[in-house]
Image (cartoon, rainbow, N blue to C red; front, side, top):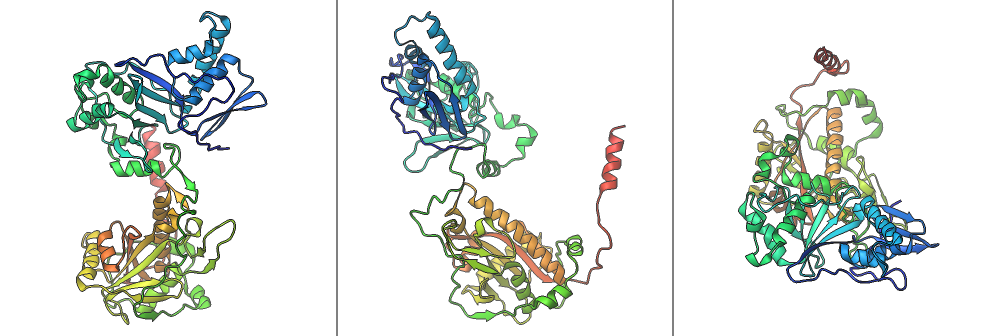
Amino acid sequence: MTIAVERPATLAPSRPGASTSTSAGDDVGVVERRLSFRPGVTLSVVDGHAVLAHPWGCHRLVAPPEGLWRGLDLLAAGFAGDTALAQAVAAGRPATDPGVLRDTAGLYQLMARLPALLSVGLFHGGRPALVAVPISDRAQAPGRGLVGPGTPVALPRHAFFRRLPAGGPFVLESPLSLYRAEWHDPTALAVVTGMAVAGHGVEPASGGGSSDDGPLPLEVADLLVAVGLLACSAHPDEEERPSLAVWDFHDLLFHTRSRSGRHDYPFGGLFRHAGSLPPLPAVKPPPAGEAIDLPRPEYAFTVAADPPLTEVLEARRSVRSYADEPITRDQVGELLYRALRVRALKAAGVSVPYDVTDRPFPTGGGAGDLEVYVTVARCRDLEPGIYHYDAAGHRLRSVPHSGADRQRLLVSAWQATAGTVEPHVLLTITSRFGRLSWKYSSIAYACTLKHVGVLYQTMYLVATAMGLAPCALGSGNPDDAARAFGLDWTEESSVGDFLIGPAPAPCEPPTDFADVIDQARICEGASQK
């Protein structure tokens, strides 16, 4: 079970009389590594036993001896170096006392077993320069001595700087590291920014800062290399393993931040905005344009006319050519109804504090964040233009736009098909992000893209069953869409595009499953000989 408990910046000792000393090495110019429990860790006493609660669970220490207690208290109170920890454990006893040796060994064994609970602070002249915070329960204790005065170090291409929200510190992060570096001293920051500006490996002593910094540049580089935020290389990008070289910066970051395990940020259905913002309505209020009511398909007729599901799945293809006769308004309406309509609305309740929509395709938490805009170039009984699909009222609403804006959308769709087909009807899928981010943290945009995927497949299957020509597109221009639809792209932006048109000719239905099983098994057998 996960226990998420936040520790204040300075936590009072958990037992009366516990020490609050931090370090004995506060001389100006001295650089020292110190340890502290990371944020989110609490130390408490339960029935005489020590309990360490942390973001990934908890650990119970059965009746720890007094010296070990004092060491834990010191780590809970703030950063402490080796000297301060030794003094706290000894509490005036000789260093050779068997009890001191036992308690000291116990403390360091515990820290070695639980490295993910310990932040590592680099202190310069007694003041914090940077802090390496573990962000995963798989983080290992950083080693030492990895960087020497002549070792070239460089900032890898996947590392990045930013400032944490709400007045938080300036940080260095990377999806490849299980630590986050938080900066508290501009001198230490200059060491790494100097390396970043250089664009290649430099020796720590010349990476930034000044000659008065003493051992700070070397210690900064050594800690950051140890936690995977710097590379011991003159040209780290050229030395990437092939599996990493194929990842773009934003793809790898998005992947690791929208899954759990490689970060410690708020994650999942936390309703972080429930106290400050109201949820967006489950159904978007339709625009004020002219309404065109679409016919509702008849259930019994549709069920009787549709081919079996297996046949539809086997026949599904992306079709990039059209018949001469255009698609009709009723066909567009049937596709929208069967794939996108609102089937039901459920009012907010105690367990779900927002209105929920039920649609033919699934969405996280019943958010129903997706909208569809229909850009028409050629369609019988429907004038060329841009329309918003009212999924609750099953009607199209005309959207005011310029001919140039409509043309830009159609040209962009044509380019996305490599110029293979002149678009007849373009369905642009947008997301009202607030419907998801009001509830979900870290995964809201990932959920939106999953929704687009299941909607794509739903439209593919419906269009195939109807004998139409469907084709999902892999790209689109959100600025062009926002301008054409009159949207603020930070509130609602295009996230998918789908072409629909008349099938060029009736396709023969499949008569059997298609697969490559025999070829794969033959190749595998040949490779093993």
